[in-house]
Length: 282
View (cartoon, rainbow, N blue to C red):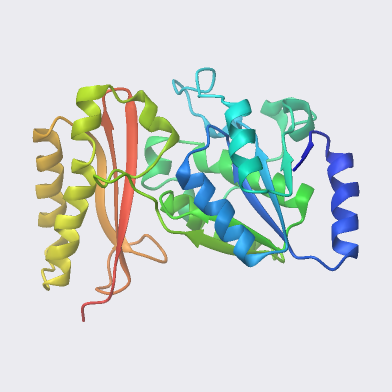
């Protein structure tokens, strides 16, 4: 496994990979890797000849009051995980490589239709930061394929829209959400849960699945289903931001097929997000 920190060195290496006619996949991460991240890497390895994993904690996707300074950084453990998977290359740039000028003055990328709804409403500027850094990584690595997790469903749609709107020659793949045995979606921020909160946390997925089953039975009073789910989450000790049934492609109001249930809720110091796609029931 090769480790590179500089863009010029990375490009030189990847030029030789392309000359060997190998397909390149990118898996962008912020480190603190867990089995969910590793599943993205494994999917990338099944799709491409050469896999690049980036590790960069991106400051522009953290909004005011969030945990950039305290975000878990576990580089040694991350590298050990990736070495065991025989990853071809790990790109670990510093701030000056990714943002050569003042971060506050950098060129920004916005996906208007998805930027300010759901997580974008509660974390204003978050998706602008995500879109900007992903666009930078795409330009630096120039992969044929990139893999993102479906747990961050809105983020996945942002990236797909970015690629389409900017005419980037990259195929975007979504990887299924990996869960703990009790249903909790794997996340780097699960470490913020104390023992009691960790016991409660799977209730978010349970609430989503209950609504999914209702939809599959043909229930169509979406507003009532959403309100009841929010009430249940509050009773269980969560502080919900949203619980919404929406179109799985646009995240707009439901059209009775291709639905996705999106939810975000605080439990103690941890902000948990989750989603479940629901097949057409028409």
